[in-house]
Amino acid sequence: MAMSLTDKQVIAIKRKRGELGLSIAGLARQVGLSRRTVYNVFENNSRPVTPATYRKLIDWLVDEYATQDLKDSQAVATQDK
Image (cartoon, rainbow, N blue to C red; front, side, top):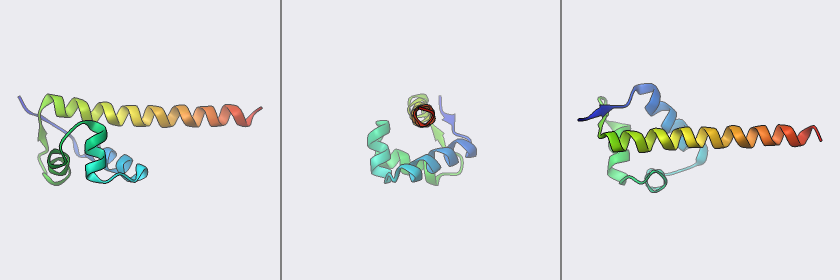
């Protein structure tokens, strides 16, 4: 059963990849997917993926944003001291 990534999800993944300066291969390594799969997600309009691929990409995206939010919160907390 294929799932589809929305355009907004793909844009968010591309944006975070750019912020981190990751190549497609680098992103694929971090997420645990093949370069080809990541490339296809970025290039195909319909973006059908397996549930496992969907979960890996969304989990990575959430983890990256959560990690950044935590770093930002810690930086603000240490500024007050």
